[in-house]
Amino acid sequence: MAGNRGVAYIKPGVVEIQKIDYPKLELGKRKCEHGVILKVVTTNICGSDQHMVRGRTTAPMGLILGHEITGQVVEAGRDVEFIKKGDICSVPFNIACGRCRNCKEGKTGICLNVNPARPGAAYGYVDMGGWIGGQAEYVMVPYADFNLLKFQDKDQAMAKIKDLTLLSDIFPTGYHGAVTAGVGPGSIVYVAGAGPVGLACAASCHLLGAACVIVGDMIPERLKQAKSFGCEVVDLKKKATLAEQIEQIIGMPEVDAAVDCVGFEARGHGADSVVEKPATVLNSVMEVTRAGGAIGIPGLYVTGDPGGVDDNAKIGMLGIRIGLGWAKSHCFTTGQCPVMKYHRNLMQAILYDKIKIAKATNVTVISLGDAPKSYKDFDKGAARKYVIDPHGMVK
Image (cartoon, helix red, strand yellow):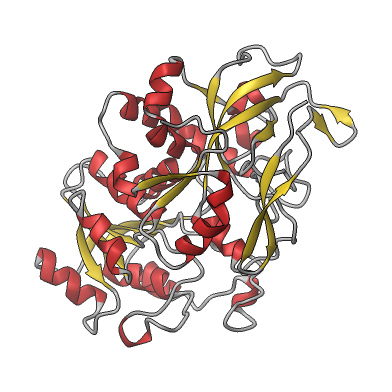
């Protein structure tokens, strides 16, 4: 039997590569005949992982990280009918049973049967069911026939793997943010945050036909990356307000749609850019979104934040100016992206060259051993999407 190694969260600011058990087709003490074991082809470092690694969640030490997984099937349970050994598949980060009310309604981000603590589960993530993460050499995936997106042509898949690896999370998540904000042909959009999800969202806005996509961030390298594929940018460290900077670009201080790709570790703007103010993005996007507009919120907000700026923030209670959103008849969409709602069509967009999502997010392939250093670089604001290649399969 092969060995296995994975990226383990040790303490705030520290991850390390550890030897871990080779996965089994088991759920607790019973066989998992609907599952498969994957040889991990690629597994990506996500900004959501960084929240845990910074110590900003209640993640337990020793947790094996990783919810963005693409892999090749090496073993399948006897109840798996349509996925075969050797298949290369994208794994949605949402673990979903396919049987519960929510799954049947397409709400796979809040499956009712995969996490005893709350609706919804994910690999290697705090409060999401205790599933072992996929920043490893091998991983077990349950409910394989329902969850996995099979790539029909293996050679084509490997040729485009740097793009296809993003189907497990950030491409659908960014796209979901744009769709729920009502982005369509001719839209003028503001995207808060130029991390990987923000960049994926901005690229998705272009795919959806937006006329102008404005991306806000505080890190020059990330703003440069956004400009590289046709976005306008605003520097949130500047003294000028967000509305003023938007007006300088489009001649008016409001946009049609906005997307929060930052989440609960947001900082203030301008002079307050060095101070954490977790409601900043939500309040600012309400200010700059026109009356009747919509706001997509794929940025993560948590119910437990040990490092929160005050007692309210520590339980996810933020100073959101909901009265402004109500007065402007805004529509808000929160929660985990239901990846399966989008991933097949986005795969086709990649395969037929309608989008270069790896280029937009600056995918950078690393070895499993490079993961600890890459976590540190990412935390410093590197304008890259780090993709781990545990077996050296990516050319």
